[in-house]
Length: 268
Ligand SMILES: NC(=O)c1ccc[n+]([C@@H]2O[C@H](COP(=O)([O-])OP(=O)(O)OC[C@H]3O[C@@H](n4cnc5c(N)ncnc54)[C@H](OP(=O)(O)O)[C@@H]3O)[C@@H](O)[C@H]2O)c1
Image 1: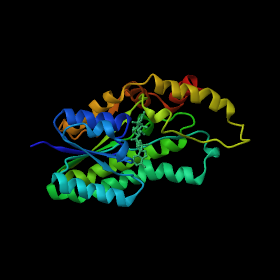
Image 2: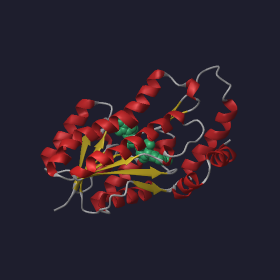
Image 3: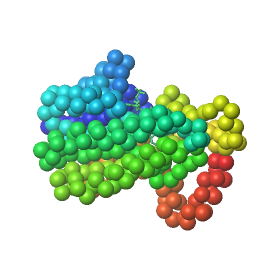
Image 4: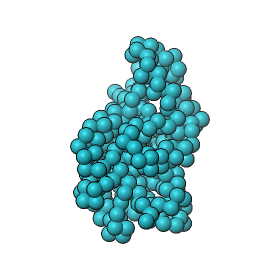
């Protein structure tokens, strides 16, 4: 029998590539998006159902999860992928921007997870794959708020494994490096404040370099392959790098001071 995956943020980038890959591999795919009317490509695919789901809107989460279970009977894998970056000098942020960043990347991911847990418990299995980032393990200039959400996802997921594995539920963390998607333009929220010029030197140096890393980054399809591996390798492994192994290894091996020096040299 075909398995079923539910993916958040499937309208573009990593989420869309993941939906396409699972469908090609014969899975039933529940591709959830904020604007189902615009998901015309996805709707062409066999075994794929597009449902509306905004991770900051509890009603849409409940409705989409109920509709997915009613339609397919069983969901085997959840991919919590929806997310975006709020970047710039922290001092230029507004409380509303910070709320929205955490509502999407952290609280939304938690709420979708909680909505699926009763189903996973009842069926005695399930895999929750959280798309964090290499930015959940290391940090770069001007990404303080984004990093704080992805570090939260790392801690949340790592701890969950202890209570969920006895119930047959696996958790996985995906840690992509720079990936060429809408992340660096359409989806990005850039913090600026008129008259706040003290950070101009850092902004003017680091931002173009970070954006360049995105423009020359790996493909969304390569991350989809890693997510597929995490869904199917039948292992208790928690973390999966994607275009990030070198950086993660350096972070593990080097003392803080040396690692920070490398980041400064590369980006400032
Ligand atoms: N690109 C990178 O370099 C990179 C690196 C590491 C980790 N990541 C992570 O990978 C994930 C996917 O990003 P991406 O690179 O594929 O960028 P993307 O192409 O911009 O995709 C982001 C997706 O998240 C969706 N989304 C945003 N807010 C949402 C909400 N409130 N409810 C539901 N969906 C929402 C977007 O939907 P709309 O189309 O409606 O905006 C879009 O489908 C994110 O969690 C990101 O943090 C990306």
